[in-house]
Image (cartoon, rainbow, N blue to C red; front, top):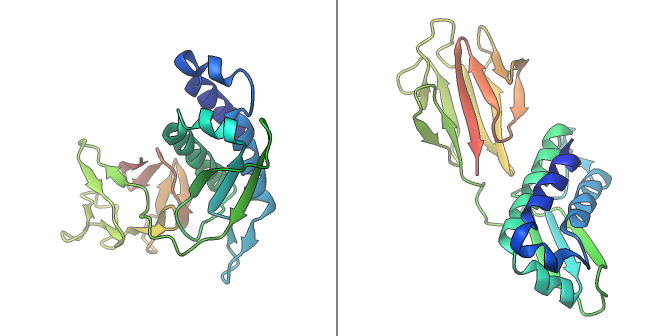
Length: 220
């Protein structure tokens, strides 16, 4: 499903104005497929036994392909990052830091050829992509490095008015390239997209339910 969605998005990306220049040479979808395969092939376990994957990918391409990609580089990297994060979410794979993708020129490569170097990188200072939660009334609350608290206490980041919710119900914690929902042993539990969870790494669009109140997680 992730690869199918990637192919659809990248095909739309090179339609219209850019369709002609992408008739030959390296195709963006080929890079996306390689990234997903390398994420799976290079995953390992951290000290807590959780799966972690490489979060930095250096993509080397020929000078000619690098010149073509320059015309859509920002949009292309955004799509590739989203694909890596989505595939990691499906496999419950975490990252040591934000997902970074670099496109660099390699003089020794011919048109259509490319190399990808996957790396585990926790030294980057890049922030977690802008994220927020959207409340039922349409209000948005930006998320930062500090945990966002959810519960009936008035000092909570998200105050729940449902009596079925606990005073200290859950937290949203920054985790690598995203946020993790952590249930704080609440009385009635927390759900992500309808399924009860204790800890869950979140993806853009996930619906979080506490009692009868549902909020949406958004990541740009």
